[in-house]
Length: 176
Picture (cartoon, rainbow, N blue to C red):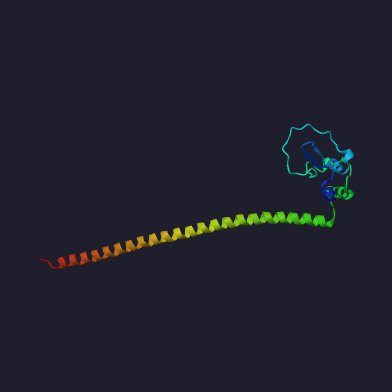
């Protein structure tokens, strides 16, 4: 048997087999390597299941690390040490630096979101300003047209008034 299953078969791994149900990978591997200890669990009566193409020695992950603490060290004592190191939080300067970096990345993310929001608001404000400028120019054009119309009307009245004055003055001077 190769050593490859040993890396996947640390404490707590379970495997399902139709004949035996859920069993410890450790027990299953030992049953393949030591036939005299074939069943770590009593076999369960299972309804006949269709055969699958999954080999018997393929482990599955079903337990957490804490569930594995009470089982004995099976293959590699370094795995226990690794898990112990992972459980104990390190307190070195590098860890503090990474925490600082993580906090700064979070702050950067927040500031970038704020920047995007402000840019969106600025775009909306720019659009409103452009719209207001267009509206003001339109109103100024309307005022200019009204003023031009009033000026044209005033000139026309002035001309009519001057013409009427000339005609009336000519009639008054020509006494019949």
